[in-house]
Image (cartoon, rainbow, N blue to C red):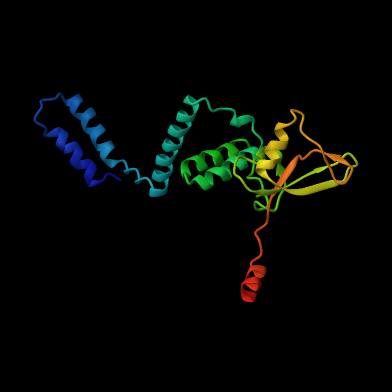
Amino acid sequence: MITDKAVRAFKDVFHGERPMSYDEIIRTGLAAALQAHSPAEPAQHADDTAVDNFARTMKAKLAQKRKEGRSGWQSMNADDLTVILRQHVEKGDPVDVANLCMMLSENGQRIAPAEPAQGEQWQSIELVGDKERLIIIGSYNTKGLWCAEVWHTQYLRDQQAKSADGFFMNAPHLEWVPTHFMELPTAPTTGQANEADTQ
């Protein structure tokens, strides 16, 4: 069915100011009528527009990181990408988080399960960092027994500096080299309250 809009478009060509031959009128008029008759494309949904805009922002961030020499996500495992993802969640940039989720998805991977909260897990002794505090250090000794002690991080560094190959301790009379550490759990408050009541 020819719509009124298509008819008006043809008439506009036919009665136009520029002189045209009969064939030109037919071709131009029909083209205008067909264009007017074609249903207008529906407007893009706001969700799609938002995704398109966000994708451009993600691409820009990835390009910036490539200039900084960052690459290799295609060969990373899910555990390593998940660690970085969780770190960026804490930093608060949704674009970085989205890009890391994209990397996991493109690798056919899932987000790895969360590790236990800090203070409830053993970590590599190399991750102690520079913050001064008491920590629990531990390792298996030469007899295959797990050994642990509470040390201050400054004392740990002092002992590590004494030997390039690490250091040994007795527990008791069995040599062991600390390989892991754990944050001290939160101190109880009950004891403090009782002590305050007795003073």
